[in-house]
Image (cartoon, rainbow, N blue to C red; front, side, top):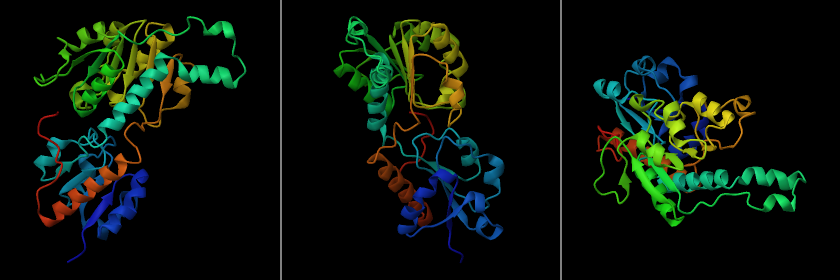
Amino acid sequence: MSEPLALIAVPFLTVLEPAFQAGGLATARAWELTDEARSRVRTIVHAGEVVLTPEFLSGLPGLGLIACVSVGYDGIDVAWCRANGIEVTHARGLNAEDVADHAIGLMLSAWRNIPALDRIVREGRWTQEARIGSQPSLGGRTLGVVGLGHIGAAVARRAQALRLNVQWWGPRPNDDAPWTRAESLLALAEASDILVVCARAEAANRGMISAEVIAAVGRKGMIVNVGRGSLVDEDALIAALTDGRLWRAALDVFVEEPTPPERWAEVPNAVLTTHTAGSSNEAVPLMVAQAIDNVRRFLAGEALASPVAPVAD
């Protein structure tokens, strides 16, 4: 019987091949796939934000599992996969603390204008007069969390330590949450000085941070996004920053990745990072190990370690 293959779906995941091979799992690359190898593919190793079309998946007759190294899986039609006998797993909760750390780092960097101040020092534009009354205090402000899963809760805990008042909103109640749930996303935006987007992306919430929500945060407010780029109306966000209708923004995720640099070249008051919030030296090995474990379990006919839940967190 031919050895089953784990298919590496996207080029930037080739760095994971040695780990899979060290675990005794043979791999192939989607962009180099031969007809002979195609018939041996039983599993796919994937980054969940990248789209896997039903057309592509239908061409892998032995496929039974998509193991996402990432927490998100918005590039995968889970319902279609299940209807066609394909399971989906993900790295649920494994990098939540790191993403929350990054979210707070983005928030502080943008609120206190740290990147711009760094440039002032480096470019020799430091004047003593500019120090006085140049930065607003953070304590006592309201931070709204959109999506109170593992990441959102971790952000909320950190925000409390920074003397922020925490509220949240999500489509489902959470009776165990110690923070107030707003009546709606718009109500949360209106109440928030800082709106942190941590929701899981899906078709129903694409563009949920709409022009109306952005306007509700307002000219003295900030939006931080560590969820997915698709959650935010990026054009509306850029327009609001440019026109001064939104004070500041801090983003780790974008509609298109890598985001075109020219798109942001003239956009003021934005701190941008390269979708690295959850990619710490500690979290990534855990996420890879879990994907390997799920592949092994699937091939052995055992229960999967972290299947995607039928209902979102």
